[in-house]
Length: 166
Ligand code: MD6
Ligand code: FE
Image 1 (cartoon, protein in one colour):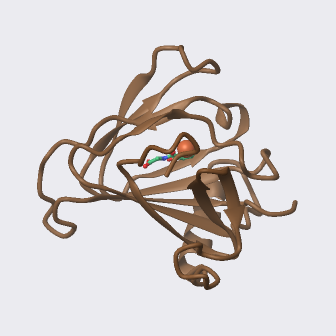
Image 2: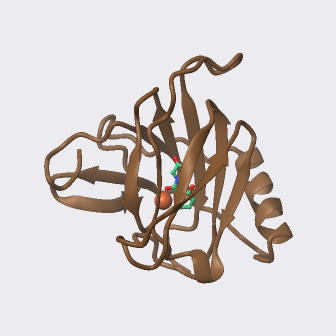
C-alpha cells in the first residue's frame, strides 16, 4: 500500500539483510518482513556475484548488495515514474534483472514532468543504474498481455541494492 492508501498494481517481496516496504507510514527499508514478522530470506550467493560482475563491467567495482527487491507484474500492472532515494548510499549503483514478459522501461529526466524515453526490457536483460543517472525519474509502462514460455503471464524484476550503511 502506498503512503496515500492506494494499492500498487505490482506485488513485492524481498531477500537480503534489508527489504523495501511501503505502507501508510511511508517508504523505507526494514530488516523484518511486516507480513511474516520474520527476517527476509538470505540473498542467494548467485544474486550477489552476478550483480557484482554486472556492476563491475559497467564501471562500478566492489558493489556489495545487501537488499534485493522482487517485483511481480501481471498484464496491466505498471509502475509510476519515481526516483529511488531510500538507500543510504546514493553513490552505489542498482543492478536490475528482468525475467518473463517484456515491458517498456520509462526513462525520464531529473524532473517528474520530463517526457520519458521508452526502452524495452526483455527476459534476461540486466540494467546497471548508477552515476549521474542514479536520480533520474523512471517507471514501467503497463505490461502487455502475453504468455512467456517459462514464466507464464508474469514479468519479474529483481533489483540488487546497497540499502544499509556505507
Ligand atoms: C522494474 N525498476 O523494472 C522497476 N529502479 O520493475 C525500477 O524501478 C528500478 O529497474 C532503480 C534501478 C533500476 C530499476
Ligand atoms: Fe526504481
